[in-house]
Length: 194
Image (cartoon, rainbow, N blue to C red; front, side, top):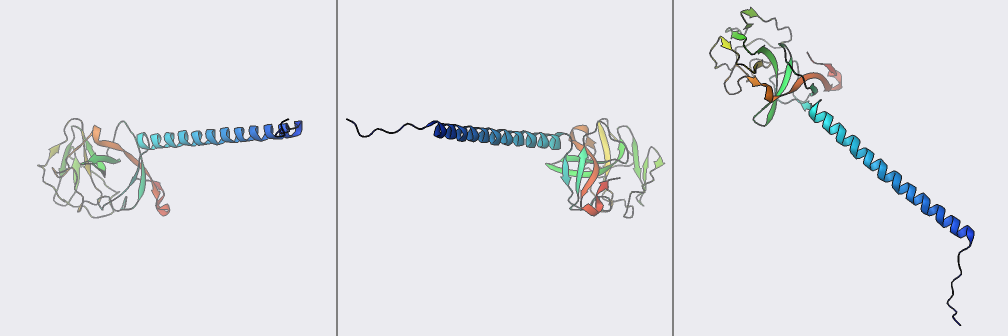
């Protein structure tokens, strides 16, 4: 006779083991689906941020008064840019932020006092917080903006290197990241950017 016989579990023990196993299975399924949902939400958020609403941190002084170094701004993809819009664009693996002054075909002229003329009309630049300046200009003025390009300038004209200088030049549509629309940091400056 064999003395090593184990007793079979009774109905209550089987029922308890079955409930524990079902609970663990539901728990694992819930954790897995929650994790996958979070991954999908994060991927969509990154996709939206990269493709439609790039968030940019401002460095440098060329836009001081409008956007200061350390500010964080949101840009929006836009099919067209008009005079006065602030845009972000790629230049030598960096992203620069400047203001649109003129579009393709427009004639730009700047006098020695820093007054800007587009198609012989002086721009009223109420957005400038610093004195106007001729700045680092090495292009021949008056200058006609080439086809498919945008003429841009920083708001802090005395320190900005922009379309007035051949080292940057005019900006092509392919370079444009987007139009800066909101400042989100610092909170004291939160709001639309003009």
